[in-house]
Each structure stands twice: as structure tokens, then as C-alpha cells.
Amino acid sequence: MDALARIAFVTCADMPKPDSDAERLMAACGVPVDLVSWDADVDWSVYRCVVLRSPWDYHTRLPGFLAWARRVDALTRLLNPLPVIEWNSHKRYLFELAAGGVDIVPTRFIEQFSRQPEAALAEFGGREVVLKPAVSIGAFGAFRGPADSTACAAHLHALLAGGDVLLQPFVPGIADGEVSLIYFGGCFSHAVRKVPKAGDYRCQDIWGGVASAHAPAADELALAEAALAAAPAGCAYARVDMLRLDGRPVLIELELIEPSLFLDSAPGSERALARLLLAAAS
Image 1 (cartoon, rainbow, N blue to C red):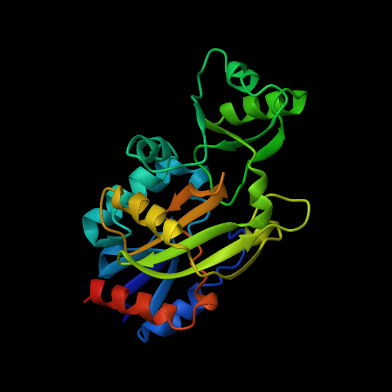
Image 2 (image 1 turned 180 degrees about the vertical axis):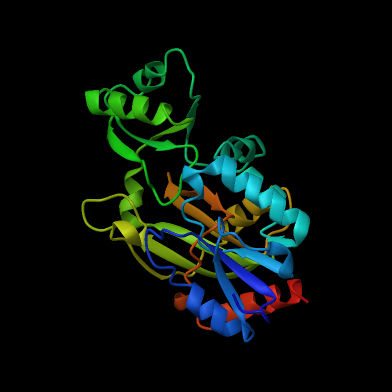
């Protein structure tokens, strides 16, 4: 730990993949920045600002992670803010957004202790669906397959053993990629289109997806801004993921805890975020 550091970037001890943003953003800050695992034994009060960057195991230990965030929030400035982290950590927020008029991918919520969870699958007949944990990152735990298959039912029960589950129809348009709009301090910065590798539907680079710069359409910007307006507090950084369904953009997820920000796709974006973080730490 650097005794002069005013800012800590929060990571995790066992990274599933490298954080492509961290080195670029740390250099842009121009001051010492400590990269610290969220569960490390450190005095977080020595930092003026603690920024969540890549705590990519939080979904496997959510109660402990939220307890940590509450402790840190009492000691220093946490970014994104604690109310945002708590709200965004479980994907039930999608239903709140939908109730407020934000278009989302059609989604059924299956509670962990539902008595007849297969009834939700039966509504889809033999159509392809996607199952995913309601607390997850990076498509970990996701399943794609016919709703009436034995494999689908088995996967549903396996997921329910660990928590709540989201059930969605498979949207073929995902083959064209999903669009991510990135915001700093509530202002649009840049966007990328993430395209899955051939034969897959997962757009994340860990599954072979490839991202490229994207010029967002007016309806994509409108959807992103409507989603962000519903967050419980302002965000230092945000990523809004969407795809097109029946010609219109629909929200996949609102990423406000630890998103990859694709800084390498927009030269200068790291400096814009660094200025915001330095101001927060001043």
C-alpha cells in the first residue's frame, strides 16, 4: 500500500480475467492509486475515495460484500454510492425499471423458494429461453435451451438452490451483438457493440465476445438515460447494456457496481473519468 495514495481501486483476490481498464485509469489519475482486494485487511479510512473497479467475485459472497460496503461507506467516500450498490446487486431492480416505463427484455422472476418453479417454464412450451441467477455477473450461471427440456428444468433447480432466478425468452437479435453505453458523472462518454463468437450468445470477452466502438442511436441514448434516472443516487460511472427487440432497444442490464468500461475503445475517456475521481478524492 502506498502511504501517499488518496484513492483505492477495489478488486478481488482471485480475478476471473484481467481488468483491461485498471492500468489505463490508474495512469490517467496521475497520483498514487492503490489496487486493493475488497476483503483485504486494510484500514479503508486512510483513503479519501474508494472506487469499485473489479470485485468480480462479489456475486458469490453477496452478504459479506454488502456488509463490507456499508463499513467502508461509514469511513470514506464510496463510488458508486452505497444506495446504488445495494439496489444494483440483485436484478430485481429490472422490474422496478419496467414498472417505471423502461423497456426491458421480457423477464419472469422465479423466487428461490417457489413451490412450482417449473410452471414458469411451461408457459414457454418448447421455445428457447435463457435462465440466469438474479445475482450474477458476466453471464456466469446462465443457461440457454428449450424451456421444455430436461436440461433446462435441471438447471433451474440448480440455480434455485443458490438464490432467485430470471427467466427470459432467447432473443435471436443477440447474434448482432448487444450495445453498451458508458456514462461518467451522468454524462454520456462512449459506446461499444459487443458481438458474441460464432455459435454463442454471451457477449463478454471471457466467452470470446469482441467489442468495437459504436455510435449510439437516439433511441438507445433515450433508453439509457431513462434507466439511469431511476437509480437511487447519482453514479460516478455506469454502463447500460441493451439490444434490439422488434426494432426497439430494450434494456438487458444496468451495470453500476463493477462494469468493464471499454476505455481502450474511446481514447481520452480514461482522463474524463480520472478527473471525476480526483475531484471526489479532493
